[in-house]
Image (cartoon, protein in one colour):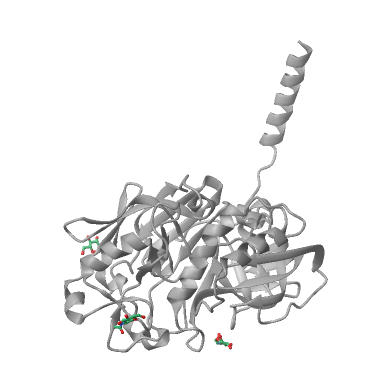
Length: 414
Ligand SMILES: *[C@@H]1O[C@H](CO)[C@@H](O)[C@H](O)[C@H]1NC(C)=O
Ligand SMILES: *[C@@H]1O[C@H](CO)[C@@H](O)[C@H](O)[C@H]1NC(C)=O
Ligand SMILES: *[C@@H]1O[C@H](CO)[C@@H](O)[C@H](O)[C@H]1NC(C)=O
């Protein structure tokens, strides 16, 4: 009886508490993002993407280790060359008060936010050194330094006491200042000497009531320019003006290691005959990867279907004009929805061929080799050449991913 009444009392308190706060949350906050292309950097984007893929697979196996040193030891074994990503989407993010602005790579494949690769950290009265060391390796680069807390300003969104890594050393990030990590918060586990997790900017803004939902909407657009501001991040909501038709969600895959990322289950067919390229399997969506990477056996099927040959200079598949004229759509089957990746979407923007070490008159395909066979729980990466054709939502609160067609889905930009 005593226990019952205690329980009752607790229930009453819980009701009173939950009925009380009516938090007025701000509308979603949008931020323009720029696509930048560093033609003087390492031209082989495939090498950078494959190095990243390799580390993404290994990282999750180390997610439970407590210290950054242990993660570093495992990553050292991966032994991938440090290369420059060459192509990135970046956002201008303020840190400190008054804020210094940093150009940060937008990354759904990692979750630490850090600065200092290029422009040095300018400390202000809001800067707090947490005393812990931080270190993350990305395959296509790495950084280590000290973990701070500071005020982060993203557009009109002011995020107080956000964890920010300050690099003392970094490699692979020439021309940018660091990363805005907006992937699953679990990826921050074990990245600092203090242990535990570092809430992402989205988590912190949501916890403070500054945005109404713990999600992020992402709009990219295909472009033939080396530098252009044509993308948009929406914190706490989606921008309905950026997509056409329905926004359809699928749960994060349950297959490891893809489940540690913004991972999904997907199958891929080619053309009107529905030739299977990739049987239903787990992989990830990732704004930090340039290409669409498929497990080697799946890529071989695509190569056969298209008649493409491997180009030694770029590492990409290459087709002739006659093959391009006959190229059919790839169909990405995600949940109950099919997303058509048109022939034009499948080719690298021809205006940017020479920037990746290719020849101006050739036609290169953006679908490339993951560098490992299927059946390993991370069998594809839908990088931003895919995401440029579809609106993309990472709803971490509900562990799901949304896609919608856009006015660029069928564009013939490339
Ligand atoms: C491009 O990359 C090179 C070398 O990787 C670097 O020195 C340079 O600062 C970068 N430039 C821009 C504009 O990002
Ligand atoms: C590409 O390189 C491989 C070996 O490195 C060679 O066998 C092949 O002939 C080369 N292909 C072309 C088109 O140059
Ligand atoms: C793209 O084109 C296909 C057929 O060519 C059509 O079925 C589809 O509705 C178009 N998608 C969009 C988003 O316009």
